[in-house]
Length: 527
Image (cartoon, rainbow, N blue to C red; front, top):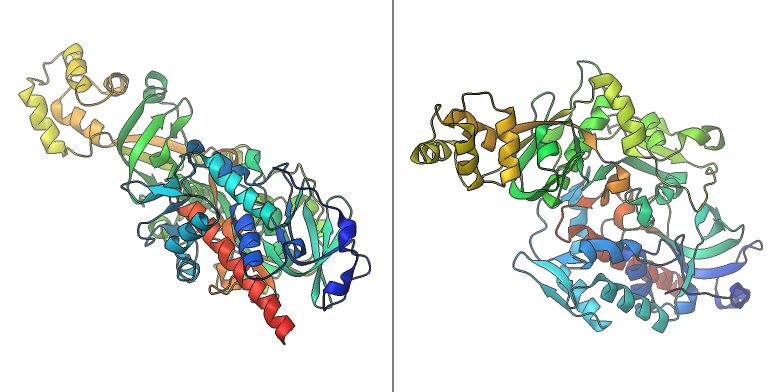
């Protein structure tokens, strides 16, 4: 659904208590940069809090709103999770999410959806879906709610520069026009899934206002593995199992369980993608520390995000090519952050077009990584039969009369009763003969596959890293640095596990930011 508006209707600034800058072609009370889950919810609740819909504008660079929502959950839109959030969110300060979820609980979120006409249902694992099991139902309900409130939506436009004039924000847009607004919410996400509109524009904009950025990395992303008979013989095979990632120093991630998909390039499936964050951190560490001083920090990967130095961060969000157009980095702001975070303050921001995409992690970053480590950053360790111990498997093999004298064909038949036949063929192809029961059991329980990296932002569902949450009030999502500036969703240094946690953060944080912005504006008027 596309909304078109006439900017001339805003030429009369008498409805605002603060005079609009003379160069502005349109004036608003609240502008929201980004028409995804966070931005749409922010606009809706701000209107429900008392702002006029015609005084609220959403800017979206894509042709339509909510593209990621439409594609989420394989078209079913897993929009929340009713389970515990403990350990489900990551970033340098993952407990930041508790501020938002204590004010916009999952129950409140679903109640709001119901109030605007969206009925939801949940499964036995707490994952919440629209009752129709179609993501398009969510999109239609939200866009209808925007239309009913007369909220202004501008598609195929992009916010490219922000400045302050008096107590208002002056906004330069990609079409050469300028707007002004009393309050601003940045909800433009991160560089993951550029085919669905992901880019680094929100990171740039917030950095231009003095905020600090934790290096963006692909998360929930498929893994690239070194060539192995498993990838050749079992391509396209799905299996349920467990796995963990072990870096070059022997530090292991947490074990993930669920469905894996063997591909020609490596490993996909929800479970494998959950290891993408740890692998991305390992790639980043390999680039930062190509010598023996490498440390990957995976032991803390569930509670904090590693980040690159400021030059690496610039490359990741596309600033390196425009350094001459940007302000100096504030190196003092990185103290206490291991010298890894980056901050940009003041000055102007390099211009970027509507078609600009985030730097491709796979093509550009991994070519450097391969040069310093021959492509190997660690191992994916797979357990194809987590319900059996190694000892139980050995006993089972002996029960099936499998010994060192057993022929490969017999082993193939026995293994076919335990694991997919193509996987069994691949394992037998790499095992040395004679095939001993303990050797076969060990291979099934701890197959090690060399990891080369991830498939990058192009294939990532979400961005790890982003603008540091320390710059924002967890109770309101208002910036500590710039009054009446708010941020929500993926643009902040928060990413969640699969199962609806990322969309729930996007929706709930958007609701909190929109509510807070409306209340801040009304308080200003009351004063």
